[in-house]
Figure (cartoon, rainbow, N blue to C red):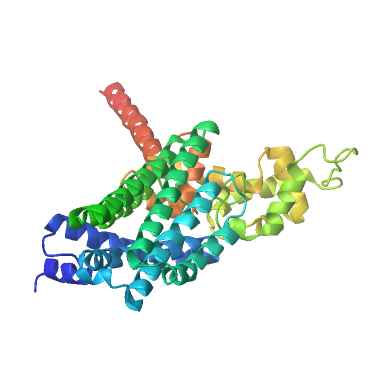
Length: 398
């Protein structure tokens, strides 16, 4: 048995499928499964990663079951609405619709339309038992399949129109239009599926497998080229993931930097403190590159300066015009620039980890915030400048 034969049998693809489609489908199943494992592993940093992990596993299951569903729909047995068919399609469409509903709230969160999508994402899982029950209430299996397809079609239309409107209306990054593009493609696959049901066309029915498979790979390529595009940002300042674990730190910084909340003038929290000593300790912290510690948090920094957490936050806000997250990430980005100039052979991920960033997403956001360009473009610009300087020096020496 060849590898292609194994993949064909594993993902239940019919014999007429091309090697290309088999490989794409197999890769999509593998990548969605690995993506789910990765998100479940990262849930300790952001609990919403549990939702992303669940969606990835549901997509993996649907990709495996897609071709089995097509085989059932084109078989004469579908006319006999037995319990097995009803149960299968109830689970199948539950696994399809539940992630779609979850994506509605996840997209709203990414586009900053809702603050906490977690309850809604969790509630979307209830669609699985709900559709399992509904499948037994319809007069036939085919009528339930039509209903579920139309429901999916409506969800994709809503997601496409709403996300495109939100991105253009609120002037979000144009890269998020890729969300609308994926919705359009999913709309097309469901449209082909309905057309296949009406015409009994097996090729049209199988579009429910081929298009989603390509969309999974499209998501992976998009995440690779634009790290963090689908990551859940923490707070409005998009601070480092580890820093987000300390809710008290966030509250302290918000309380310190929001002026005019009370009628009385802000109290000087550093009154009686020797600022020269604080400046010396601050300079030593930067010189020792304490910002490279990926576990560094505001209480650790405050202890280094010999201040309370409130005083350290006040010091940064008043004298450095930065909050703790911005201060740490600013110096990390400066170190990144130095490493790119000195060690151009290192890849960006190695540089990011060396400088204290714990994920490609936080690295990408920090570079974009302080330099205005993505990491890859920053590296190209710095290497171009360095090459120009070397060329000029060589000419002068000659």
